[in-house]
Length: 405
Ligand SMILES: Cc1cc2nc3c(=O)[nH]c(=O)nc-3n(C[C@H](O)[C@H](O)[C@H](O)COP(=O)(O)OP(=O)(O)OC[C@H]3O[C@@H](n4cnc5c(N)ncnc54)[C@H](O)[C@@H]3O)c2cc1C
Image (cartoon, rainbow, N blue to C red; front, side, top):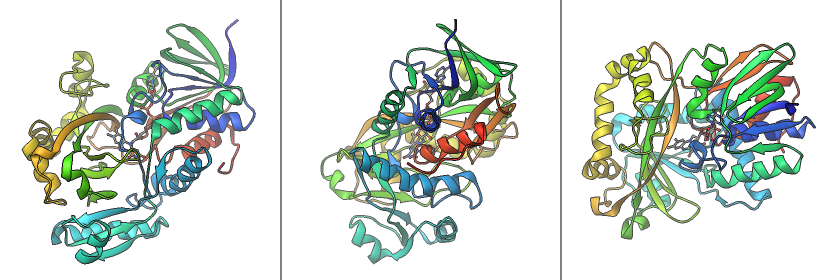
């Protein structure tokens, strides 16, 4: 007999785990299937570890609603479970007058989303960050730092403690719908589920296609590389220093962060990864690269943004080019202060017309028993927003609503 669960969640990143956690809170049986030997092996374990306030996101969208809620809930979760975190606040710095209209738009969005933020002049910003250079800044007190891997592992512990199962090292091939139930085919046997949620991150489009859903998008992997700031440069950063982002992209720009371990990082940039799990230029998977390069949306994206893309590639390979970018906000940083400090790969959904999907995206196959829900775009701030995203998915799946923990 195949084991049967009310809900099977594919993917042991923070979104899958938060979903499974919401499901077990309702008393349903759940299994999380993760193909790696460890939870949080991809985006969740390779990011900036920032608990975002919800400042940036277009009012009315899912990000605008779920990020501010997630910010408060993630801090409360860390506090309750004694996980490392600090509510350090963050500075968004306009380095030249041309950026002020975009900063004003962030201020407006922040207020519309209920996120406290204050405009500072050059003197005011240096009270928070004495080494920063800019013409004006926004101070956002609720932004915090944490360790998302630790949060994911704690969620895993809570799920198993409530009777849920976490199956590691098991790859899901596809989910096949039957009347009233779904068969989840894995590399090590099948499972039966009443309903399935696929939170496969970098593989979410492939899993949707294999399960007979039309994702409407492709996942293009964009690597974000970090540099460590060493020596006296580490003393130049107290908390979190961000640029005003370019609204053409859903990326927040290279920022400087002091993590919960006290280490200071600058990054991430955004370059096309040559494999879905392409954590360095040396990791190339020809089939996956061909999938990216032959996708019509990729060609359109490249035509529109080739100059930006080349600039990012140049900054990826040249430490001097990268340092120039950081110096816009922190002029005292020197190339010799930077050391390579790892990378993460973003699972970014791109439409056939070349637009980058900005908001979270869910695609459903059916309703009620026998249905499958695919999470197709869960980029930043989905780690911040994971707890409310999990409850949102539960509601879409079952109609049940849950309050925060
Ligand atoms: C460089 C970078 C910086 C970021 N910074 C921040 C930040 O500071 N704050 C923030 O809120 N967000 C940040 N994000 C975004 C955040 O990391 C993601 O939004 C979040 O981790 C998404 O979680 P997930 O569970 O959807 O994906 P993942 O963590 O990628 O999890 C997906 C899981 O599915 C598994 N899987 C895939 N295919 C299969 C299969 N066939 N069978 C079984 N399992 C499978 C994978 O192994 C993986 O563990 C950042 C992301 C990156 C890359």
